[in-house]
Length: 395
Image (cartoon, rainbow, N blue to C red; front, side):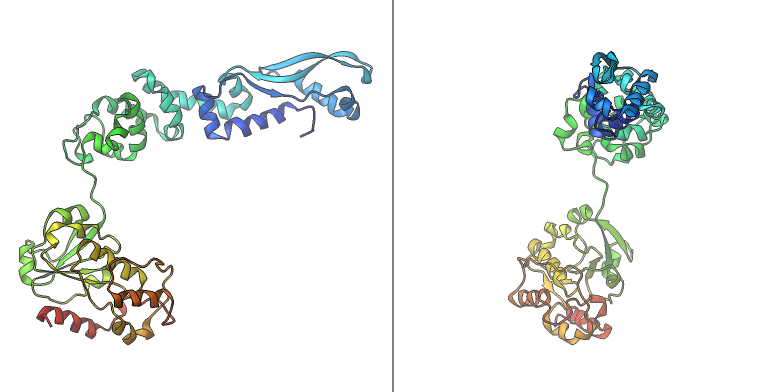
């Protein structure tokens, strides 16, 4: 691009760069926050500039004379250095509307804007006050099929505060709309409903809270009864998968609880009297806040590394009477040849370790033993069995 004499292609490139390819600029232009007219200098040449490059001056004049796009401002200027006297030259582009801008941007931009209009029209027909939020949600709106826009129009009047009555989102009593659609369009729906209901969704804490729907269970943990008595108390089921929320509310029918960090290790546990194992949760220990755990005997078994000790500490933060199992220096030294490197050790001393555990954490973090991690799966099977049997007999 020359320092003077911008050509129509130069202007089109600038418009794309400054308006079309910057989504936040485009949304502000559509919403009126960046008001029209849009003005760009064409950098019309002075006489000396034109004289310095006659060919570019001629190309400049010819290109703009042939341009049939809107908004070109022409002015009369004197070019005595060229011996042509007064000459009308294009000096500025002044676009007064989005339609004028789209004309400059071309067929692809016009087609895209038509897609916006197709998707906005049914929603604006439902409530024209939705226009500002539709502009803000333009990227999501563009991805919708027209059939999905029709679902939105059908869905919006059905949703109201408390509709869920404490059930799950998938159980909402809707007509003509599947509840999975609500899950996939939660962000867009929340934005539209905020506009329709004076920001009530955000003020309620989100769409689920406003609808009075329960969150879908997550943070799953495996639960395995380790003796016939506890299995019978769980309806004869040998293995269950329960959500954190369930374990917070419902006590497990056992005297002893064995909490195991990793999934694979939980499958290998032997028979233990009056014991249920909860395993595979890793860092997910929020369920251990449950009040029903206060009078249970709880043993925790995790990896011998800084994060394993951190999770042990977190468990004790919820239940101070948690006992560590096979997470000591003697166990580490016996299996030292099987240690590996921990990828990203925890560097902050956990708050609920014993003095011996604190020293072990420091030694592992500082690589005193060379390698820094002993996975619980690497412990000798007979030694694991002996440690667990000791729990069974109370030794």
